[in-house]
Image 1 (tube, rainbow, N blue to C red):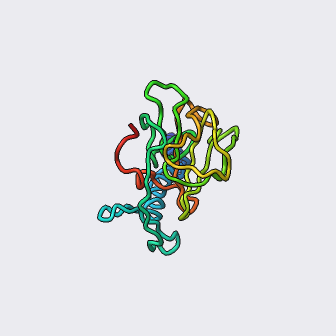
Image 2 (cartoon, helix red, strand yellow; image 1 turned 45 degrees about the vertical axis):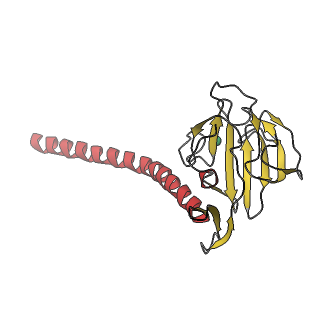
Image 3 (cartoon, helix red, strand yellow; image 1 turned 135 degrees about the vertical axis):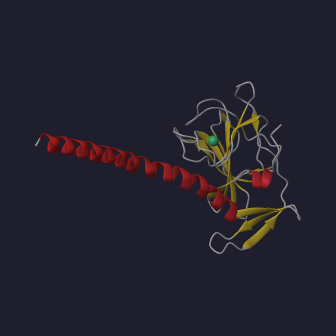
Length: 207
Ligand SMILES: [Zn+2]
């Protein structure tokens, strides 16, 4: 009788351990899976929308459905601000984002107010403030389904409809919206989806 009880208890504890471990795997797996999928996914999306042809030095824009090259452009581009890169595209930025949709550039001394310039010529489509996310930000349309976003600004000097080009000062770096310190969140979208800005700007640093 006593032996039966002990065996039952031992089995029960083993089952309990199994249940607890299964439960922990079950609750952590989707979270891990989402992080991995999103990190891999954003780079796949980025690579399928744009590519850089090192023979012609042109950026190729792909059709989002067929993947075919619909446009080859060789625009004059520049980093939107000088500074140090604090977060690359596709890296995780928790608790804000599972993956980072742009490149963060900060002043090396933590100061705010550095001048921001468009990375490529275009037309301003948005210049305003929201009290979350990008805070004070500017969106520029460059044609060929390419747009760029400049987030967390402290000041904005342009209006929707204005034509702008590299060298023009469109605003000042700041820390508005979801930001933990002065930096520029610089993002390039193709067909409305974020791509790695380095496809346009290469491997260098914004010095
Ligand atoms: Zn950012």
